[in-house]
Length: 284
Image 1 (spheres, rainbow, N blue to C red):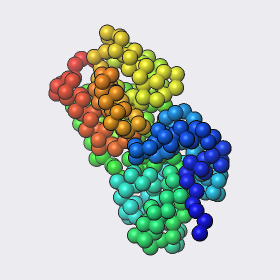
Image 2: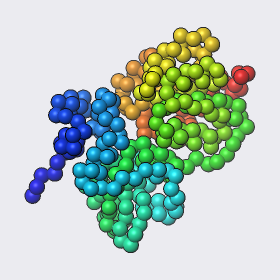
Image 3: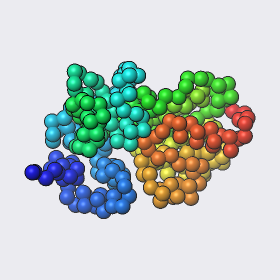
């Protein structure tokens, strides 16, 4: 029986990374329980789209995008549940006869494919997508927050800063459903500019962004007397305790690891506003 290739070996063969970079990433990954793709993104050698394209090209899989914008029936979505979809980074796309097409970050995850096939009685055909696509789709289709605009929430203004459009959109959709006023920026430099001009009540910012990253943006906020009082919640794909401790030691109000649960996000935002401002926000 032919030995199945490891994910790292596939990336080397596809010339996405070289042997030296793979060795360095595997050493950093050891003992963390995190995906190799996350490690490679953090050290700046690939993007999640590079990885998806390499897998699709190497094995002849189709790629899928914009899953969050597609329509799915409630009955169809019952083929799996939101927690499983988020944990396994997969999402059911469509059913044709006895075949289920499944979006996956790792289409070579045979255990997940076999388990779903056994549970559903269907033949599974994997398609490749990115973690951000899965996260946005699960947040939108499974973790639905009841649409209700509360007057109290509409007083608050929240600035969302993230260079990934789907992540930023998913965060804003979750908060908009709660009635918050929202501002957005796609990089740290623009986020700092918006913060200075609009002075939101709360800032949610990714740590890794172009032009000015989240760390630099946070330090700039702390250096400016007119906005240093604004609490900042960090978003990070580095979900280790060490990363959380580092951010909290820097002075960030809170930390949320990606992929983001909308329920957790809303709870943390409300908690931050309540602790910092009490029940009534200050004048704009």
